[in-house]
Image (cartoon, rainbow, N blue to C red; front, side, top):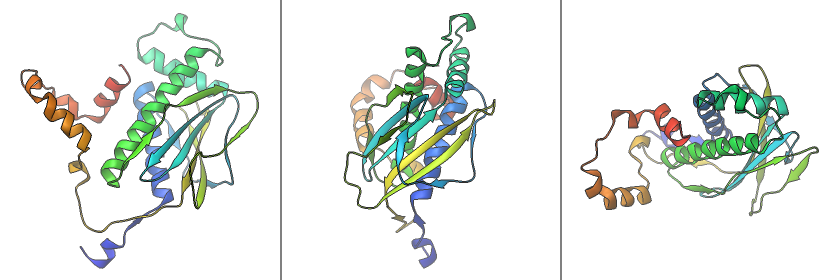
Amino acid sequence: MTPEERGVVYGTEDVLTSLCNSVVRVLNVATQSKLHFSAMVQRITKIGLKPDIGCFVLFDGGFSGLVVLNFDGDTALEIYEKYMLNMGMPRSELATSFTSDEVSNILGELMNQIVGDFTGKVRRELQTNITQNQPKMLVLNKQVTLSVDTALDKPEFRRVSFFTEKNNIFYLELAIDHTEFIKLREFDANEVLDPDALLEQQQQQPAAVSEPVSDALDADSDELLRSLGM
């Protein structure tokens, strides 16, 4: 590796971009629509939940932080409806108000899948590990400021705008301790294995030998569809 390659640094914006890509990837597959995020990111001074629906997840491990998604009612309903229709649910049986528990539950599950996708990429691409708690989804009529329940020496705050297929907007906010990952040597991210998953796979190997394995297991979209119950 050349000195230039050894000095490659992955910082807050790189972590944020990876998280944004997870949001788009999961929601595009779940809703079978096209979402995208702004090419501009905001530096903000605090992070919080905003009306009409806010969801947050704490993560800890190699680095710590807090992820928030804020939806207005129309955006929440659009994502919920597209997801349920894609699952084969008749439109007549769908909730019609964003205050419905069903809408919050679906958005919470999607948030869980987003952060799960993100933590998997962190493990492979940054060769460290972070764990997440269960997402908390709240229907709100006023803004709530959040603080991260962990020691952040130099906290950084970012906000990114997302746009749905109907051009509805929702926002991702990230609070993270200032961190940099410096590449010391070349590695293949696809070969980085989770030790716990490897151990579990070895323990289950005798039972798995007789089971057919589908080639589709390697496809990202199929993996997401299975995890979403689709």
